[in-house]
Image 1 (cartoon, one colour):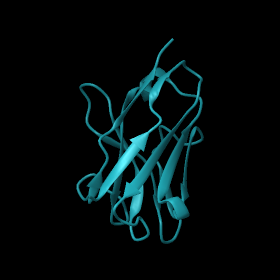
Image 2 (cartoon, one colour; image 1 turned 30 degrees about the vertical axis):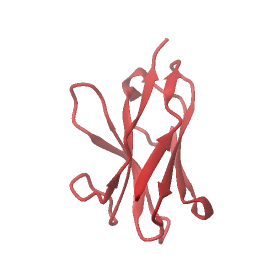
Image 3 (cartoon, rainbow, N blue to C red; image 1 turned 135 degrees about the horizontal axis):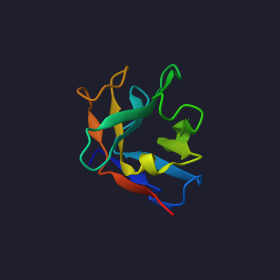
Image 4 (cartoon, helix red, strand yellow; image 1 turned 90 degrees about the vertical axis):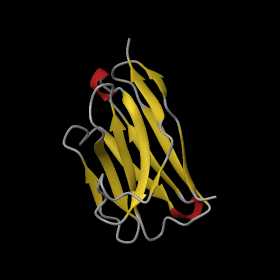
Length: 121
């Protein structure tokens, strides 16, 4: 079965850090752009960051630049999202996604089930 499996969400205080992981099972990420979208309650799903596995192109949304870092371990088929200096407005369900480059909401080949990140004191 081909799937993306996320882990690493949870509750963190403002200013804290979390790392999300996204592992591909049953297929290789080599030919995809892989990244993260998030959706807060009552809001539309938005793109956070992605990396193109074949040429290492990286994209960050303006709202997370300088705070979030996306990286990958090709040998493990895993992509990571290191989130620092978290803010309450970062609270959302975070979804891993893989698709053709550039990664776009309307053109996703694989979605993860999502992991909840809550930033609150």
